[in-house]
Length: 105
Image 1: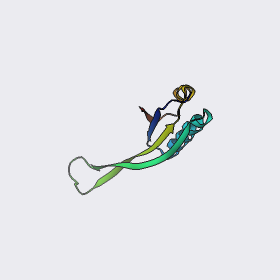
Image 2 (image 1 turned 120 degrees about the horizontal axis):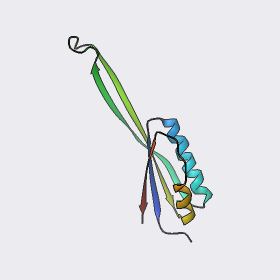
Image 3 (image 1 turned 135 degrees about the vertical axis):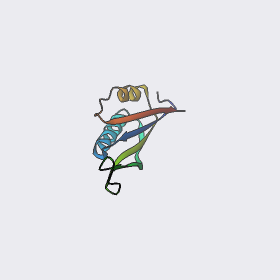
Image 4 (image 1 turned 120 degrees about the vertical axis):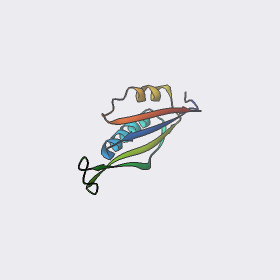
């Protein structure tokens, strides 16, 4: 019944609380179907910084800095069944979460 496929799920979000809830939901769903889960593995946070002048033209020394942090998690699921794949595809996930699913052999 169990196939030799391995599923690798990469989750990205700007909010670390939402990404932790999503990874917990994915792990609970996969374990309920009998699959073996390893993770969530926290990947390095990508930080993008932007520097903008406060005024339009004259005061070059007056600047503001903004940053965007992208948090990432990695989940590996082994010994999957068709029920596992079906239940993972039917999950309703919160807004602001990007999920990348890869099927490995």
